[in-house]
Image 1 (spheres, one colour):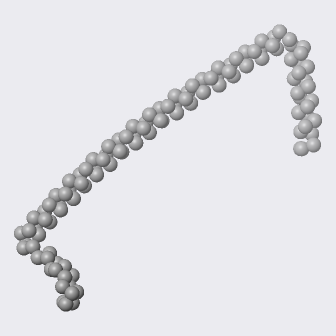
Image 2 (tube, helix red, strand yellow; image 1 turned 180 degrees about the vertical axis):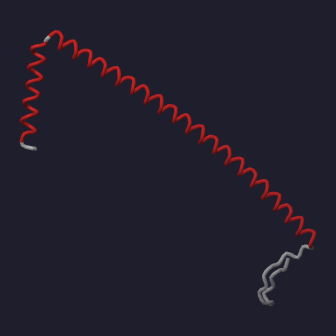
Image 3 (cartoon, one colour; image 1 turned 30 degrees about the vertical axis):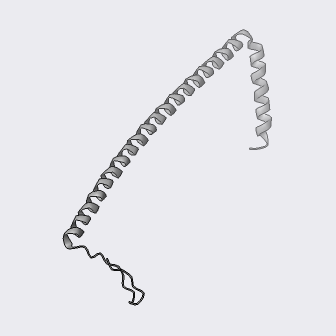
Length: 114
């Protein structure tokens, strides 16, 4: 390596190692690069698998929640339908009056629109 002397003009420092030392250093650098490249690839692959696993678990949880909600809505609609049918069977006059009242209100509400 070149040393700096105040009396001499500036010259950049160059490695004065012989060729075999440079090659050995270059081989070490290549080996270290390759080792780190392989490590990075393995870490990326692990991360990819973790993301895929998490995505699959989340997809399954959403599907389960959607199915549970669909089942609850279906059960509630069936109960409401059964209760309505039972009410109409037990109170036909009141059901008819209610239907007539709803029809009149809808007719009045839509009369001015069309």
